[in-house]
Amino acid sequence: MKKQVLATIVTGAVGACSQAFAQSSVTLYGAIDNSIQYTHNDDGYASQVKLQSGQFSVSKWGLRGSEDLGNGLKTVFVLENGFNANTGSMSKGLLFGRKAFVGLKSDNLGTLTVGRQYDALADLVFSIQGNAYLYYFTAPGDVDNADGSIHVSNSIKWTSPNWSGFQAVSMYSFGGVAGSTGSGQSYSGALAYQRGPLKLAAGYFHSDNGNPTLSTRGTTSAGGNFISVVNSAYSSASAINIARAGASYVIGPVTIGGYYSYSEYIADGASTFRNAERFSNGSVYALWQATPYAQMQVGYDYLKSHGDSAATYNQVTLAGDYSLSKRTDLYASFGYGHASGKNGFGSAQAVISDTYADAGGSTQEIVMLGIRHRF
Image 1 (tube, helix red, strand yellow):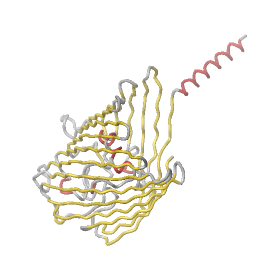
Image 2 (cartoon, one colour; image 1 turned 120 degrees about the horizontal axis):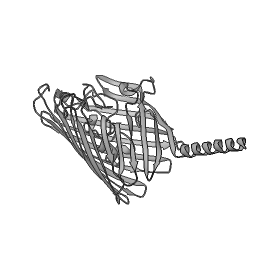
Image 3 (cartoon, helix red, strand yellow; image 1 turned 60 degrees about the vertical axis):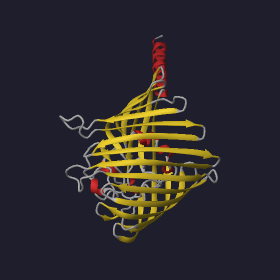
Image 4 (cartoon, rainbow, N blue to C red; image 1 turned 60 degrees about the horizontal axis):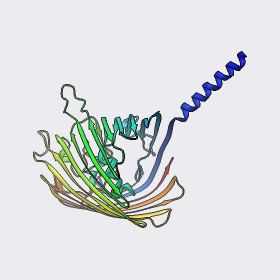
């Protein structure tokens, strides 16, 4: 009898544990992306050939999981680290520099998460831009964060459920400066709508500069937050404001779309100049899904600066991708950029989107061949 009772207890405990584990999940995921890149006019070099990790998608690994709490409520978390596939080094020098958040997800109320996350525009507007398919169809130097390179620490984010095609995201980040609640803070909001083949999205991002919660991936030659060779005179800007809106439409195997952005860098007493620097950017693209395994894309980007500088940047990009399997693909891309006019330091210099290359002249050309494996 005692043996039967003990067996019943053990069986019940195992069953309960099995049920609990069935309601929880943890997934290991990531990507390894590496390429050979040729650049003409790269930071004073006439030409340069090198291996470059993370061209079409950042090399990364991460853990994501959820636990079913019942009644349509779940606990969710993500831990994600970026790395250089050629050196093994961590990107940004952080263990989980890309994402590190935990929160609650409700079927009816949406998702509330806290930690280090992407801003609201990256969640909703990014997905309909040209770079959401094949990279480097965005503004030179990524001055408008259209490449989604900002990661915001100390943040609270709410993501709505889908309301008949509408979705909203809002975020607030604490500055973390003792005795000064607003210093270093950032906030963003975005709204998206989808109806059949049509997608629309728009959003706004604001940050106080000098904010330890921000870091970027872009072509940074002057350091600072969200600063590239295009706007390096504003590494000490007191605030950054970005508005971005995009649209895409699917016609059979072809997707056409584009976006417009307005970026503003407010000078402070330590800036090289005393006026705000502003950038207006427009980008259009066409993506052709030629076969289930192959896609091609062409895009054009136009950037104009006004304020302390008066410069224009024209950029044309071609890219192709071929899937060897569901998880492994080969890609190739060619980009050409031309800059004219004056920036904060003299003649404007061309730099193609966010390709890990620094500017080196009035023109720049980049060719890359790469392989990517996702797991």
